[in-house]
Picture 1: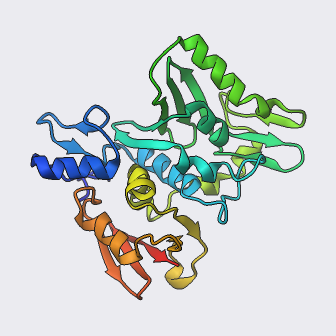
Picture 2 (picture 1 turned 90 degrees about the horizontal axis):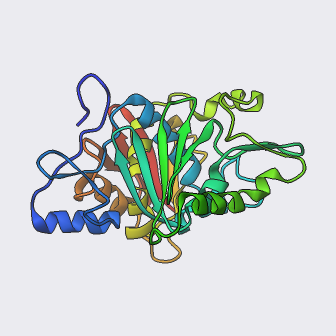
Length: 292
């Protein structure tokens, strides 16, 4: 269901040991990574503000992509944002921020942080900024929405903050090539970013996209699908589609997991429409799920 007044998601909780283990397995998480309430029950959708939901919806639009269906603002070194799924271990939604645990935090950051080039204009997620560097954590903020993202390096913490900062500088070295201008150290929006408001403008399915981003590890890991957004004129709704060439689950199976499993989106409904597609809906908004 939707929390009263602030439009946030209220996650289903569970104390049952078997269900809790299944949920952790689906999220590819351990007990230390997940968020719990005061009673110790697991909560998935912990974004507590419209700003954070809006930012997670933006992230879903950029990161739920593939080499074949890359985002229009893909980085100029190749389809690199679309390869993020290969590096992500755990995704955890917290009040006020999203955590992504990865073995290559600096590399992921280098592929989503914005820059502009003389030849092709802006790339990366417009408005995303680096706010701080820890021993193994990169703290990012999104200026237009006010949402936050932490990239956490899952490798054993060793070395110092200085060592991690040096690794970050190494992975973002290409941002400083001749003709390239990094934007992630600015305190305001670059003029080229202000023209990209459509990428963070409110959308009817914001809560659905936010919830899907909170379950990205479930989609990429447990379900083993690589979904991407496609143009879909039918009913004027967005579509998230994936290939089944490797025996991946169909739309109805994915819809069932997203609405019935322990990792379900609270309040979401799924309606099969064809043998390969169906509608996932929440709070009066809907999007298509389709297995090609």
